[in-house]
Amino acid sequence: MRYAIIIGAGPAGLTAAYELLTKTDIIPIVFEQDDQPGGLSKTIDYKGNKIDIGGHRFFSKSEKVVSWWLHFLPLEPGSAGEDYHIHYKGGSASFKHTHAVAVNENQVMMLRPRKSRIYFQKKFFDYPLQLNGKTLWNLGMVKTIRIACSYIYAKLVPVKPEQHLADFFRNRFGAELYRTFFKDYTEKVWGVPCEKLPSTWGQQRVKDLNIGKVIKHAFKSVFARNTTIDQKGTSTSLIEQFMYPRFGPGQMWETVARAVEELGGKIHYHTTVTAVNGDEHNRIRSVEVTDHVTNEKKIYEGDYFFSTMPVKELVKQTAHLDIPPEVQYAAESLEYRDFLIVGILTSALAIKEKNSRFTDNWIYIQDRHIRAGRIQFFHNWSPYMIKDPDDIWIGVEYFCNESDRFWQQSDDAIAAGAISEMQQIGILNAEQVKDKLVVKVKKAYPSYFGGYNNFSVVQEFLDQIDNLYLIGRNGMHRYNNTDHSMLTAMEAVENIITGTKDKRNIWEINTEDVYHEEDEISSEKIS
Ligand SMILES: Cc1cc2nc3c(=O)[nH]c(=O)nc-3n(C[C@H](O)[C@H](O)[C@H](O)COP(=O)(O)OP(=O)(O)OC[C@H]3O[C@@H](n4cnc5c(N)ncnc54)[C@H](O)[C@@H]3O)c2cc1C
Image 1 (spheres, rainbow, N blue to C red):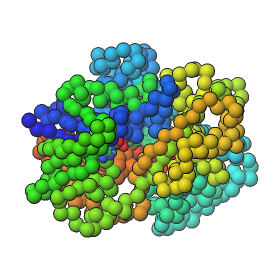
Image 2: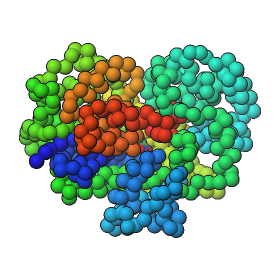
Image 3: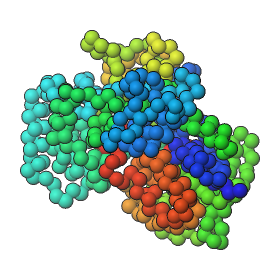
Image 4: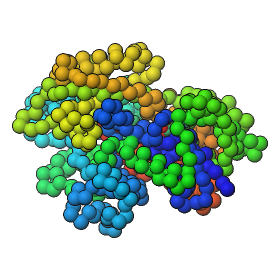
């Protein structure tokens, strides 16, 4: 019998487990420090109200991933057209009930319209930015002229070579638009000035978005609205629909976790991998784990090892291998950005929309005096996310470092601060707040600055350990979305099946043009 030890029951770890069970005779044993599956894609149930670690859209340009998701949670009937087909460019894919394993009406994904806006100077701007009359009116004549002039100037006199992300933005959007909509949010997310962020980050994330494309899209959307989940031909920053499990992304991973266990895999929750032990053949032999409920420590041996834990911690915990000092140093200097979200249950919003319900999934707060970066409206992601349909359930997002005084405050103080900020910008009234919850998430974002410049030495060292596979987001120190994280797991399993030792194919995921998540792209809008 062969065993695979998998560190982490997030999307990557669970995908690896399921793929091993369905394609090989290798038995996966998964260790998860949390009490539930899903990792960053989990959904927390708080007194019947459900909250994500930031909203999680399900969308992908990989047919393999979409079909994998729909196998577990099919689209609810009627959501993708009468025939329940989903059309892809190239034509073949269609998903029917028979492909799915839905066990009841709740085991479904919904196809949701995406609505996100920027809240700037008490006005809402459509995001993706639309150059329409409303936007220009909101900006005012003077601002509009300045944006136009600085855009033309940037096109005529671009900064060359681009030294940092600020140059990158100025060249593409002009200095005024960059300052208005990109600078503050990006700096909130990363905690450093755009001048300290590499321009390569923009090249990776922003891709081909430019003003011309925005205009073209604005025109196109007047005439045709996309009603399928065909997203291959669309710039990822312009995606208008996404899939979402009825009870949040965690529902997907709870379903997959159940399937893994039913198929004979084992998942140990509240169990942290505390050491990874190598052997004299430069392979990994075992992991040491601690169960937080029983405080029991155990050693598990395996034939293959998949890691989704942060690379920095993996290197620190690896014992009995000769790790060169430069690898240890490079891993130790990797940086992360932490994240916290404050769930606020309120009876009403203070903000009113003319003649319509407030239907945004999320809004970006473009105000440097407000610490919060973004607000999620979870009841708009899915009506099943809220217990009482008359209530409003928002999530106020903060990007921070665990060393910040802000992070170290008590939950009550953090929640009070969030409520006060929301009142200050006119989103809600403090006296209407009924309940609150603070969720802190360490290492939500692997940073592409600091020690990242030397990441290749870490990657090369870990890659030459034959039976160790780095997969997922923090597992590869990559800004991977769920689909990328899953695809890395699929590639790793495929390598085992085909006996491929070279791991480059795993690292190639999320470097091709077909991928890239919209919010993460526009850099202003980093999920
Ligand atoms: C705010 C935010 C919004 C996002 N929005 C989207 C979105 O809209 N769409 C999208 O596709 N993606 C989104 N993502 C990205 C998505 O969450 C990740 O790509 C995905 O969760 C990564 O999966 P993973 O399995 O690699 O890692 P994770 O989800 O981080 O899972 C890793 C797991 O390993 C466990 N673990 C770590 N160390 C140990 C250890 N030593 N022992 C045991 N267990 C351990 C962790 O507890 C965790 O459960 C978002 C991310 C964030 C932070």
